Amino acid sequence: MMVEAMTLLIKQLNDYIAQSDGGGPGAPVQTVWGNVAQLDRPEVATELENHIVLTLVNLEEERALKNGRSFASVGSSDVAYRNRPIHLNLFLLFTANYRNYGTALRRLSQVLTFFQGKQQFTLANSPGALPQPPIAEFSLTMDLLSPKFEEVNHLWGFLGAKQGVSVLYRGRLVTISDDRVLTGGGIIREIDVLSRDATA
Image (cartoon, rainbow, N blue to C red; front, side, top):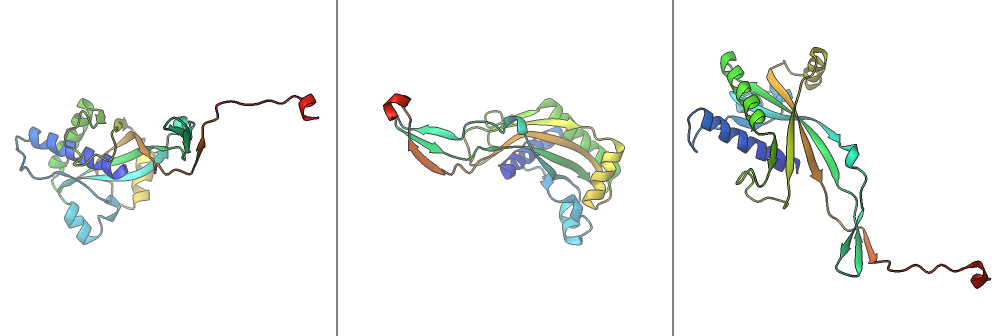
């Protein structure tokens, strides 16, 4: 679901920028995904130049949703046991990788304006963003993060890249589930309790 979530965001953001620039469906793509840590590699740098680059920089499990049922009823008489889904927060870095500094700032402003206007993304409010939705339900809420100067320095040092014009968001929640049945059985309908006298 991480790929689908990022694909949906890129499609929606590109549509917004094209509309803001007065372009139509054939407007140049402005947002791509890529690893900004590899901008020192010529082949990668050329591919990502003059684009908004979306990079996944971290994952975090949402522990508040870790508890839950590990079984589900199947029909009227059976139970299937599965591992619980993993609920993830995605830390997404949007870097305006443009040669012209003014253009970079304008693109970054468009990213901020886009997510200010639309914070929650579902399949219902993002029609056509995913050609073949992998699941029936999908929800992603984007939160703007404001790291301190020291944290920004650590982030770009960790990436091993020169700091660019960028903004960091947290996307909540992406659910990962294999839906693999581990075991099954019948539903417990009654419990017989024997007294000590009956077992003696």
